[in-house]
Amino acid sequence: MREPAPSHQARQKGFTLIEIMVVIAIIGLMATLVVPGVMNRLDEAKITTTKAKMTNLKQIIGQYRLQNNQVPDTLIELLQEDPKNFGDPWAEPGLILDAWDNEFRYDKQSSRKFVIISLGGDGMEGGELIDADISTEDSKIPGM
Image (cartoon, rainbow, N blue to C red; front, side, top):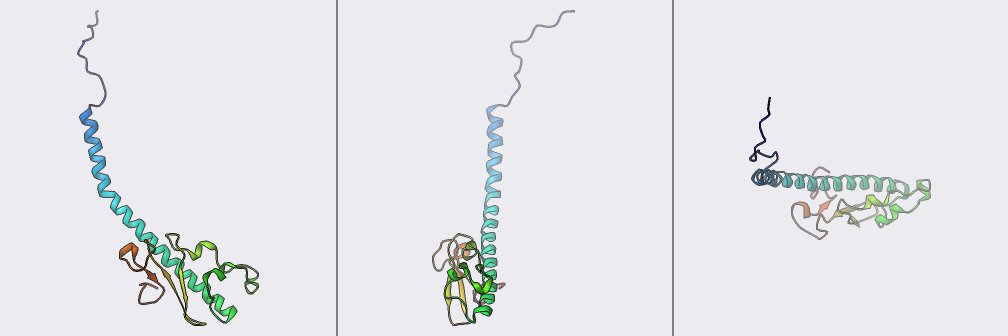
């Protein structure tokens, strides 16, 4: 038996340019739908992280006040070794930074009262959404 001669018009396997362009268009469309949602979640996570750090700092400052009969003058004092804390610092350096790596503002109002403020994503006073200031004052930080 004789095999038929291969046709010169045999179709090659692979994708056409149009098929590749359709796949790229679909991927682009999916990316435009998914990326904004992911970015919003990242922004929400930074706000939540900042609030958690502020809560932790409030607790540490409360412990500091119990040992020293007053709140610290600056947050930097919490990073220094303290004999009243068994020679250890009260906080790690990363704790005095918000989720955007900006140092918290600290306002000592009296020997017992203080306010911790994050200037948000833009690092400037005021702003909205991710750029809004976050404060430990009850009126400015929901959930604290």
